[in-house]
Image 1 (spheres, rainbow, N blue to C red):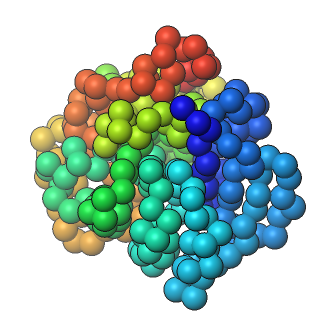
Image 2: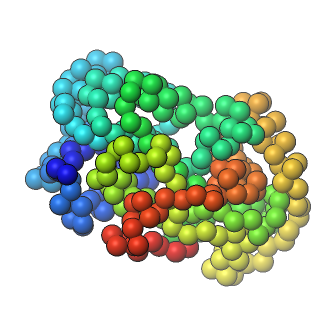
Length: 296
């Protein structure tokens, strides 16, 4: 198989730097054509490994960006959720027609959540369908919870029911419910590995997992590392939580509620969006031959 040419949209979010760092290790150099291309609004110096393409994602830039990406085999999107930007990317991707498109998903399994919260994250699922309907292989990468020392699940812990200020816990369902977590380096390596595979051998949804933890595991870690006592003030049955998710969503989705949704979805258990019977670790990293999965 010849080397794969790849372009990225956006590198300023949580996954941008980890992907660049994973790429710079060189472990995928025998399969990825150099330089990779990165579309960004920032003026950055290109190297023999990374070609930065400066451009705004607007209607006026569609043709010029598509021309600069002509012949690209794989396009990976790392943008924040923004319907206007997604529409521009769709137009560019439909002009370039890569062999593989990886959209900005990297979170819950939206299809699973839609079985009990119809329309959840429809801006993402609609984006995927728009590209897929044009005949371009599109793969959603599901990571469930990010686990990031200094932030997600270490300092930012509202998604396991902790109120840091009040030093209290509100359980949604069983605190021993399992949750899939992913470290950023593992996500980055998985994306680069997917890029190198035959697109037709990749399922439409790829679920990866660095580790699995329970709500209680995260709570215990927080108590230990912060030397704090937390009081359980309420336990809401998962059946009631499922109703509460739907009610909250139907009243209008707000990104400010993201930690509520993460906790609520995770509380529903396996194959409800945040923990899975089927993961694809062996697809992207057979026998851990490319890297070692990180633990919580």
